[in-house]
Amino acid sequence: MVAALGASLFAAMVVWSAEVEAVATVPDARAVSEAAFRKIATVLRDPRCMNCHTVTDFPRQGDDRHRHIMNVLRGGDNHGVPGERCGTCHQSANQVNGVPGAPKWGLAPLSMGWEGLDDHQLADAIKDPSRNGRRTLAQIQDHMAHDILVSWAWNPGGGRKSPQISQAELGRLVQEWIDTGALSPDKR
Ligand code: HEC
Ligand code: HEC
Image (cartoon, rainbow, N blue to C red; front, top):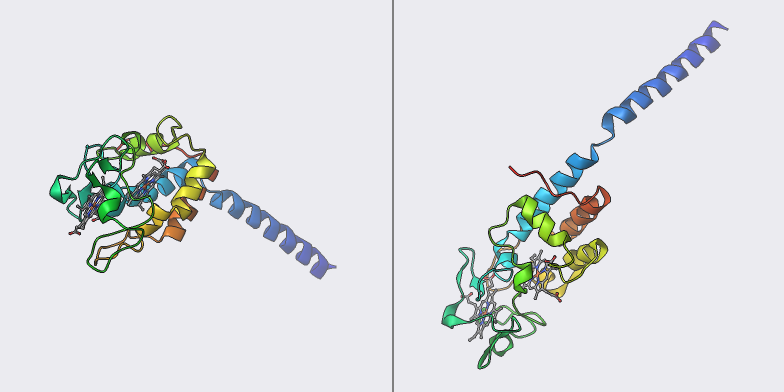
């Protein structure tokens, strides 16, 4: 009898403490969303991405993000000017001579230029259909996780460095960001 009482009391205590624990560990969605985006932003600011996501009329190169050699220009369709098209030098794969390559190599349109944006502004830009190529959040996640030019950043050739986190982790973080409300982090 005493043992049975003790057991049920114990069971009640376990349930109670599990509930307290559950409440204590329910993450604050806003904090999770903002933290996820701050990590995503470190990838968006990586030179491998930013050299194509410029707000200038030319691409950039290297980790110091200097202006592209040979006066290469954006051109009307983001693929260079007549006589100096991106595809003339950039093939569909990296070349042994160090020229990077992937299919459809070209600059991101100016509406997708991210230079100079803080984390809040970056998140706003990525979410905005009028700037992101009319993509839904699901399409943004798919693009970050699978697009061929995004993937190139993890296989950049020529001794170039890749972003600090893997593309799989980027895809996971973008999904987490969306699932927690796709919030734009507060300005700091
Ligand atoms: C070789 C140039 C190039 C590189 C490198 C590149 N991008 Fe892009 N990116 C583009 C182009 C071009 C588009 C537009 C494609 C379209 O709309 O069809 C684009 C579009 C996007 C978009 C969708 C539009 C938007 O603004 O939300 C995202 C997200 C994106 N890129 C992320 C990245 C990330 C992350 C990296 C680096 C890991 C990267 N890109 C590297 C050229 C590039
Ligand atoms: C005349 C040849 C040529 C043309 C045309 C050309 N590129 Fe390049 N590009 C190169 C070479 C060579 C490199 C590698 C330079 C190096 O790493 O020293 C390069 C490197 C780059 C890089 C640097 C990648 C990184 O992260 O360091 C980007 C981005 C780039 N080009 C984009 C473009 C775009 C966009 C166009 C068209 C608007 C274009 N290029 C047109 C020859 C060219």
